[in-house]
Figure 1 (tube, rainbow, N blue to C red):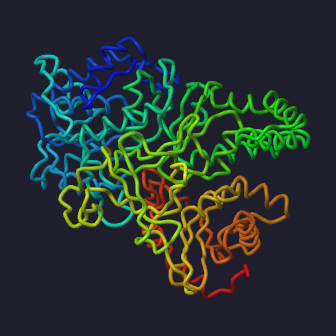
Figure 2 (figure 1 turned 60 degrees about the vertical axis):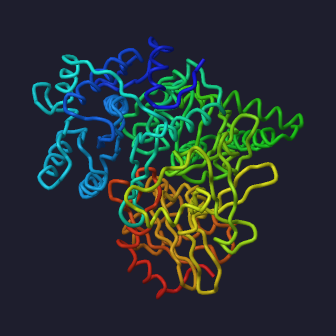
Figure 3 (figure 1 turned 60 degrees about the horizontal axis):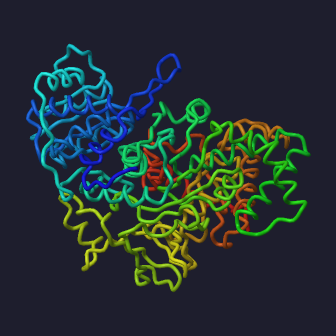
Amino acid sequence: MSRHFSTLVELLQNSLQDYPDRELFGEKQPDGSWSWMHFREFGVLVDQARAGLAQLGIQKGDRVALVSNNRSEWAVMAFASYGLGACIVPMYEAQKPSEWSFILDDCGAKLAVGATNQIYEKLKSFQQSSETLEFVIGLELASDEPDSFQRLLALGRESPHEVADISSDDLAGFVYTSGTTGNPKGVKLSHGNFSKNALHASARFDFNEHDRSLAFLPWAHVFGFTAELTTFIHVGACMAINDAVPNLITNLPVVRPTVLVAVPRIFNRIYDGVNKQMVEKPGVIRKLFRAGVAAASKKNGGTSLGFVESTCLSMAEKLIFSKVRQKFGGRLRFVVSGSAALSTQVAEFIDSLGIDVYEGYGLTETSPVITINYKNNRKIGSVGKCIEGVSLRIDHSATGKESDGEVIVMGHNVMQGYHNRDDENSKVFCEDGALRTGDMGHIDDDGYLFITGRIKEQYKLENGKYVVPSPLEEDLKLSPLIANIMLHGANRRHNVAILVPDLAALEKQCTKEGIVMDNIESSPQIKELLQKQVEKFARNFKSYEVPRNLLITLEDFTADNDMLTPSMKIKRRNILARYGEQLNALYEQPAPLA
């Protein structure tokens, strides 16, 4: 039975006592096998790292920066820092060095940790100009190097150090926003923010000692940190650390997770992948698959099935759905989606396969969970109800709409503020301490929250109509031919879009239609094909929302090219900086769609 805790230090102490012999982290080895670290081993490493940091002079109030993808050493350094009263400043390996430099200076980091030797060297170079950065540790440096992680552990073994006295109000982290506009802002989150969020969010789910996840969401992002790392340590479950996002699908049947915490883009890929496989199947299997999905969706919606529907569902479960689940390891009980809106169509599809889908909502500024769907309390299409200790209200004055307004949140999850950004704090905090989220939505009579877009993303066309692009883009990405898309049209007469095609699916469709796969970005035939695909998947859009012309590019939006945030949200400003002139040029061309 998991226990109450008020700090992340207490969280770990409880779990080390309650689950010492359980597996905690699994890591993939060069030969493809997986090795497992138990809670007891993790605790020893945390003790050694904490003592090593103390030997270097790290103390309460200091900032420890981590530039690393998920790995056991990341968690060791984080919890070692917490034990001294220091707060961590997580960053991403994929970020630009200029962002690392800005964040290190902005937070006043005393020590920085680099995952690779290359990152270590870059961090070392910042010391010359930094007023605060005294130490840099390299996780992969040779053990005899003075700045190596192994040397830090050796220092700790020589001089053990007790845990500091930590309160729930003490800062645990400066989590910097991903900077879709302007410089990143340091969100100040306390031990109490994280602890209460993990406690109340995890209480909604029936976790058990056999649960295992395949952790690929970055712990440097507050969603992965709270919803997975902190929660799983709390409940005594284990995490297999995914080595790379492209390997996620092949790792699933090996790791055999029971829970998957992910973002919509991953579920869209699952949806797309299964549907593409069905296209290759005989007609009778395709027909059974569609009938089974329809029957399962109807049943999950609370409607009784007739004899034919029940028979179709039974056959589909035996012949198709069970085999699909085996590709995910065969043990997946439920999935949790967050960070962006999940398409209702995708949610119902995965749910019909026999995998429960629970969508939630939150922000970096709210630690992050605000609302969540959970067993027997779920409406697909909504982001659920508030967790305990959190309340919402809707401000219609922010949008000028009767239906949707700005979502405002109050509770234990709300940040202490932005570091050194009083001007930004005055914009987001209400007089009563509640936080303006910047998201539009409404609450139904049963208390379920529905998010309909970002206020800042909303723009007006020439005709005065407002467009909220992100939900529309998610619907368009359900097309098997569309890997990514971004709408554009502020102050213009209609929408256009930049589209990244799925090359494998596009090649199959071009072969089927006799179109030559040549000069994809400029081919009129391919553009017409993709335009028809957009029109098909925009069939439920309002007429003014449909993009009437396309700019096709083969370069996908990724975190590496700075077109996506690490949590896979579009960086519109960066995309427009790269493609703005070409998008605007589309308005000088005839629009294929009326």
